[in-house]
Structure formats: C-alpha cells, structure tokens
Length: 136
Image (cartoon, rainbow, N blue to C red; front, side, top):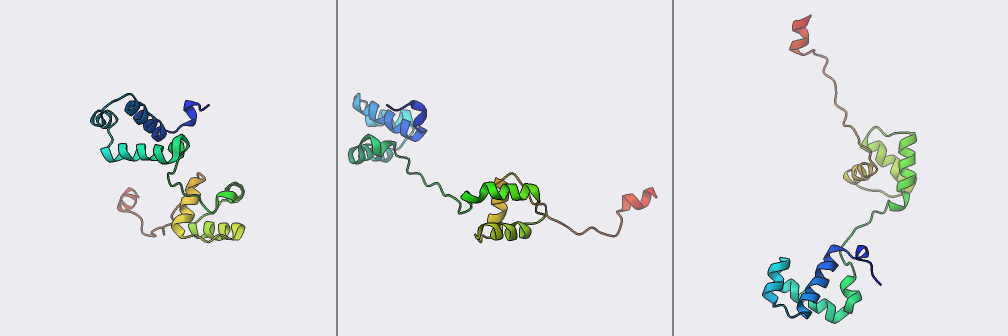
C-alpha cells in the first residue's frame, strides 16, 4: 500500500481528478477547482486508461544527472584539502581527477553545487583614490 508521502504532488492531483471524475463531477467543475485545462484533464484520464495506476504514479519529469555525480564526494574532499583559486584551476583538477571535460560555466556550476565559490581576481590600481590623497 502506498503512503501519501511516497506520492508526488502531480500524482496526487491526478488522483484527485480521477476521484472527482468517478464521483460524477462535471469536467468544467473539476478544471475550475484544480485550475487545470480540459486538455490536461483528458490527458490524465488517458494516462490512467493506458497505463493504469502505475502509469499515473510514474514520475516522467526530466531530471538531468551530471556525469560528475559519482565523483562529487571525491572532488569535495580534494577541494577542501587544497582549495582552488580560479575556475581554470578547478577545471584542471576536475578533469585530472575524473577524466570528464566540461565547459567553464559547468565547472563553476559544479563548484557552486558543492558549496564553494570561485572569486574573480582583478588588478589593483597603483594610483590611490582622491579620498586617500586628501587625508595625507
């Protein structure tokens, strides 16, 4: 038996559509109450007809996974022991440890996902600001 915590919100909404439909509620009433379109209502009923309850409860949302997923714990340890100073250094280390090559933005995304941030370096001007000159 399924626990209500095991069912995602979209599946709960679908089950509510089936229940209301089974109880004899009109399509207009169901779509207004649940704020769904008539096409969505029809799609939910077709999903049930074609796949049964298992087809309705199946979560088919696209959830991409990273090719670095198996290496994340190793990468975190490596970066905690010896932090990287730039995105280029992070890219070099990740490629060396995992053999996976990504774009610079994806390296930054991975680092941010591990709770680390890469600071951008800027050159420091040798000319003091006017406020500093006036105080001297």
